[in-house]
Image (cartoon, rainbow, N blue to C red; front, side, top):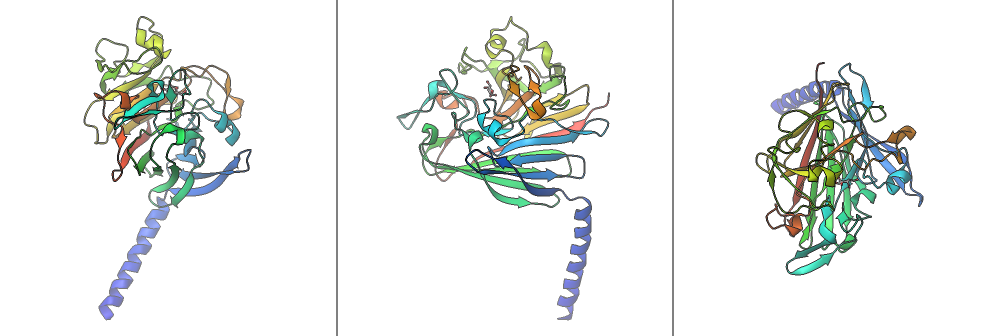
Length: 382
Ligand code: GLA
């Protein structure tokens, strides 16, 4: 009895000390509201904040990143993701600002694929192809909040049930997207999905990064980019992979050493750059899929902000913001123009279901799809 009492006292004391420690270094998760959709649905938010000047607001619409602030080299925090000021604008958005994209991120050739001998036709929403799951993909859905946690690591998990036949896809898919933030200024995103019938899955995040600040009057073309990829997948003029896996050697797609992005996106001698209006390609990341590894690093020389993209998937879609054409009014009525921001989507290869030589996008009942991504921020000296 006595020893039990002493033990409990010891534990209580430890909890007290740990409590103090985590109070000093606690990341906080706080719920809020963004506004209502026209049908009255309230879009809820969860903001994760740490003690190192980083905060990220995510929301139930598209399980999206709505704002993300991190310090520059002088310690000044700014929002560095493109987006809008109201839910209605996100719903009308053709750019997928900050969104979770799925059921199949990127394009599927003519929206067609075959599974176990049966052909499926998806909704066509991008020229002749399906893009990011169709016009009512995961980005346009209102997700529910599953759990919200504060602590040394703050987190929020969103959930969405995509019913059998939605967008043309087979199988009811149960999806979660978890955002977590600790004290190391790294935002972790984990996607998980299970199905009740064989289907295809490819889920990623579609944040647009302008490391100089989302409302800065400079774009991202001066940023220095490194991508740890020795090969990429060339595309057709409708941005569908041809099936070839081409070494980057001697091409404008060789980013294995830090390279100013603006020096590559105007290279019209490359048919591939012409097709993408810049870079809009899938890079095959070196190292082993299934292991978390650094995929890319971007450094903004002005602000000193550095973003590292880590992931455990096989590939990374890098899109240099080529379709930001000055017609979009974003946060604070700021006009977004070509090359203002960069998108890095760690994922499977685009159009994977139509290329047996690409890693498979198939998900069977009993298996769990997973994709883990880290966006890690730091600063570089001048
Ligand atoms: C992806 C595609 C791009 C473009 C954007 C959304 O990144 O690869 O071609 O469609 O989404 O605008």
